[in-house]
Length: 525
Image 1: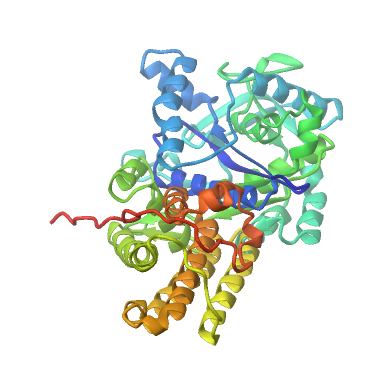
Image 2 (image 1 turned 180 degrees about the vertical axis):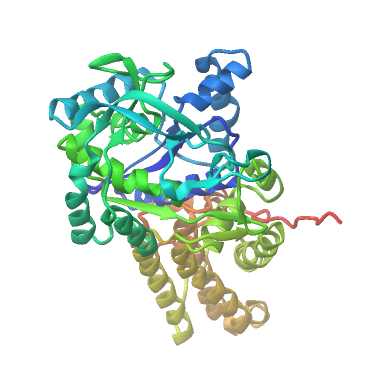
């Protein structure tokens, strides 16, 4: 079911020295929901995630644990990062690790081509370095230490002392790309989204770009530089390349041409790497820049950004064990305006689960299936003549479907869900107003009853398709209960952009009993 339109989307590759928290989960399910939507629309879709495994921080952690860096990253990825994808029902197409041979050889090829084009030179470098960030810190992120670190320069993000490094390094002529980058942001205003992120990037580049150190010679846990094996690629310069190496750069030209360029979903703290350094690297290599970079906001817990060092990181499993993966996905994708910071609280998740999922969508599904079972022996009834109220529901479905697709095009998953939810609210109101239980008591109203319940069933068919990228498990159960898999084929085969067409579910389709999609959660005192 693929059309000609390519949709390639990536998450950042995560640094596996920390265990995943709900912030990582948020980024991953956002990219997954966008990929699922495009897949459901028949676009030629590919979703990539993975792990960034080189660098000094990883080497030190491995040494502290008495194992080699490779043994250490293998353990972290296997025990923490692969399970995250399963926990959150993520249907990624590929998982790249920067220690894989496919990445290392292709990354060397990429940098060799930039070197051959004259954009790299040797020099000496002295700067303050944060091992936690794996980054030479800009002035704006260096602060004076207090308490035990008084008199020292510390990282504004980690509050740990910075190390003064003096090394012979190779540099990338980033400064040469300032004008081309500013032209890119001007000519393609949606290259960086949302607008607040774009403004930040433009202001940063306008201040002037310095050439970038791209190698380290003080340690060897990294990819050797092809023209000088006494140096390894600086971790960020190696990591960014995953988006190209995973789809065949330097090895499978046909697949690379099919997929690239793609979209990157990133946290706003790594925006500069993706919106400034990465496009400049691609320009230097003679390749297309990405289609776009979308920076989402931070998840705040108790008003603070989540972090392991401050013990505010919440493991996704703790939420999924209580509420299920669909509720996790629904909550984070709908409760936060995608692109802005959002606060997480257990109470808010619990309240939305009850109101929107259990009482809203879940109850609508249960009532409709139960009434078709009770009044029509479990067969979807043949509708009679539609009245104005029935036609109004049809318009709501059509309007919601087109508005949701348009919102997805703008990466506003929250707005897409809000549009789809108008169907849930309108159908619940429609049942209340039309009182099918009262119609069932009057034999002369049999045709009207059939029309009302067909309208509900057909509305649920549209909801199952529209919500499947967000909540794959509950929509699959609903699809089976409607008998739609027998009548229409699998849920994955339904074209999401045509979902507003009315009358797709055939009358006579045999429904099946439906257990509550979102069971009541007993609140512990």
